[in-house]
Picture 1 (tube, helix red, strand yellow):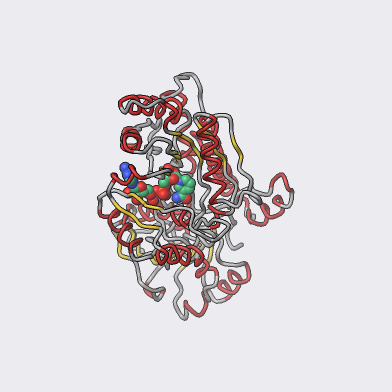
Picture 2 (cartoon, rainbow, N blue to C red):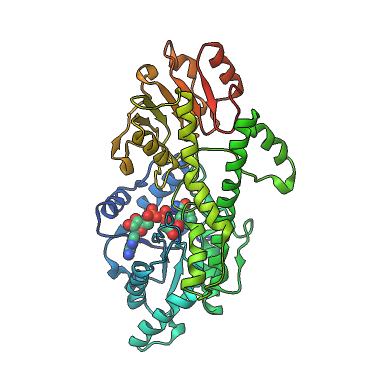
Length: 446
Ligand SMILES: NC(=O)c1ccc[n+]([C@@H]2O[C@H](COP(=O)([O-])OP(=O)(O)OC[C@H]3O[C@@H](n4cnc5c(N)ncnc54)[C@H](O)[C@@H]3O)[C@@H](O)[C@H]2O)c1
């Protein structure tokens, strides 16, 4: 978002904004700031347009970063992109907005009159109206300012890390709303200056609660769609059919074109936690105690358990016991062609194998280490010779293009493909060469 804003230009080609990123005075916050100060993106990315845009902003000097919250005093616009966690693994996850409220307070106390505060963090429905607005009124009151002296709005990113990382902000539709009509106008003006709104028109909703709900419903729909596939995946495996083939046949119907495929599970910072927000908000913010969200609850539970099915399938492939077996995991990111392990399904998968006595090592072309597992990764694709099993757990392009037979040579570990990177042709060739290959979502030998 910072790069997208710093890249916005006037018709004359002048930079529209001087962007200052603010992060916390922590190891990772300081690291992100230092990397930006060198004109580099803090994460490994395959999106060259992003790294080039960042280098350009760095050369032109309109993008910097700091831990100093004092810079809010100079801001015409503050975009809040902080994390907001919810313990989604709990049976009934509870909201805790304390740190978010504190961060908001810190901004409101400092921003000048007329500033726009744009909340982009995924927040529970009702947050802007019921939680932040009272803070805004109180803090502005202390400063002898009226409520409308600072504009509060909500809009959510649909950013997609990967090859179109930057474009997923600048060339994609946006939903937004303001706490007042003026705040909505301010937000619209800002978004129109960074997004190609001719091709991707903005959608203004009637309230910030509606905009917050749109984000959560969108992600819960996706999470539920993935969860729905779980029972069909298991069915396909026992029925001896190929669920990919079935889904390809269904997806030709325009009404069914986004049905999901089988896989190792859901990961990342958004789809995992977002279904937990609205049930909690209904009770804790909007005070509707009776509302139940059975689909959201089930999606959360099913998606968390999905990697365990893959672990059970690997165990079966290895003769029913993984104890002392050496497993090579290929890909630990939650998504293809990025290096992000937050709530990656590979983690739960690996943990289940370790608990059962297996020895797990991993390689991911986008990562050097696996912080959640305290594991150093191979720097290069290792020889498969010393492993009992090779598991594809993220559909990185490198794995799709891998010449599996040459890489294997005389080695014969079993292969479990959880993310559909081994083609039908290659699976057949492997089997002809005596390599056992199975996939999630397909019956044995398919
Ligand atoms: N990553 C995505 O694809 C994506 C997409 C849509 C929405 N979101 C939402 O955007 C929000 C941020 O997600 P993210 O993936 O960028 O998270 P992140 O953890 O990568 O980045 C958030 C940054 O905010 C910093 N931070 C925390 N508290 C702060 C404070 N008080 N002041 C200044 N900086 C502070 C953190 O140190 C961190 O660097 C979340 O609500 C997420 O759900 C993310």
